[in-house]
Amino acid sequence: MHNSATISELLAQAKAEMATQPATATDNCRSAIALAVSTADVSGEADARHLLSQLLFTGGKSTEAIEEMKSAIELRQKTNEAAKSSISLNNLGIYYTQTGDYPAALESCFHSLRIKEELNDKRGIGSTLINIGSIYNRLGNTVQEIKMYERSMKIAEEINDAKMLAHNHLNLGVLHMNLQEYDKALSYLNNIDEVLYALGDKHNSLSALNNQGMLFVKLHRHDQALEKYNRCLELSKETGNVPGTINSLINLGELKIKLNDFESARKHLDEAVQLAKTHSLKSNLKDALLVISAYYENRQDYKRALEEYREHVELKSELLNMQSLKQLGELQLKYDLEKKEDEAQINYLKNVELKEALDKLQHEKNRSESLLLNILPEEVAEELKATGTAKAKLFEQVTVMFIDIKNFTIISQHLSPELLVAEIDFLFRGFDDIIKRFEVEKIKTIGDAYMCAGGLPVPDLNNAENVAKAAFEILKFMEQLKQERLSQNKSFFEIRIGINTGPVVAGIVGSSKFAYDIWGDTVNTAARMEQTGEVGKINISGDTYHLLKDKFTSTYRGKINAKNKGEVDMYFLNPE
Image (cartoon, rainbow, N blue to C red):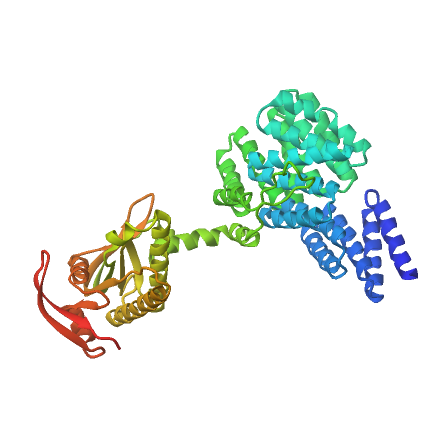
């Protein structure tokens, strides 16, 4: 009990010293952590790490702050302190937002929100909704941002929470300012900095000052804007708030450019960049680089302006690209926060695959490359990314396989469109999985026909054998499916397979929607092999037969007439 009391005293002292003596407060937190570890006080350690994280983040040490908050969350989970876990998760979301990691920010905030809903913590729900709204603000998703603030506003009014109400006024003021609705923005933002400061919320008072300054700039009330920005810089430094200091410096620099005070502007901007780089605050650095580009443009140094702008764009792309915006815009489909009329708390209509969606978003570059590989062979995709084009190539020996569904038109008349598409999708996905195992490249599907080829884009002398093996596996797949459907008294599909080997030309067609395709008489002959084949059998040409005769047994069908080909030697490959 004595140790716990000592830990509590250390943390109480640290809280009292946060604004005025952050270094001493940090030392007290570390002492509390050491004491908690030595006495196995898990709860005390979690409290100490949470507070230390706040101090580190305010001091600009974002990476260390994130790690400490993660540790606090893990410890709270061990002690089943749900309420405190939700608070730590909410703070972690704020940190990730500031550092530009929006997927992680959303994940943390939604996790926090789930816990608060379970606890029916209305004040906590309202606070977290504000944070989620601020993330959507960063992403430019105004629709979802408004929804979050409106929900939070209702809760604030319901529980009569003045601070939460002030936070929502601040956020709605910023939102309307961004929508260029300046009169409405001013009605929300006017004197809100003083309200928040009086409520003891210096952090959001800083945000209010910053946004009031921005609004006054837009209203061309520059003297008032300077007053707000200078007060914001003063309060940021007073509280040791590094991100706030950087934002204030950027805004002052931008305003001084407008006022043609270039010397002062450059000093502010240089200080902002140095702080952002020192503390690894990429989002702030991105903003500073954009204003520095404007600085050089105003000085008619267009070369330097372009260099700074390019660096800004590269950093912006790293933090967030347009595809990420679409992904996060769709995230609300999974986390619908609409409040039901007969319920007192917010409920989710869906809560599935959030982590998967966030992972896809976080690795958007990998995802876009994966999408490219879904429509182009890897080697072709790499050439396209490297040079912007992919030249058509002649391949001397390629084995082409066509697969067609028997009586597809007749069967399709008895299936709903949804079921028909589902059936075809299931079959073609099965074919995709099989040909991958044999290094055969899918070319395209045409209605109920499936086309693939071996021996490209990387030449392979075993292409005929690989295609043949894939064809047998596809027949086995179809037979297994047929037996399953018969046992269920359901209809089933049957297929014909045709194969031919020879030279083809391969390349990309289209400019807005790429497609990899192949051309030549070899392709046409492979199609005729399928058309003149039989259900459940693999019909091959004479050219393919000569490549496979030592590896598979075949049944000679004789010379058979093929459309536009005349009589052609054909063989059925026998099962292995």
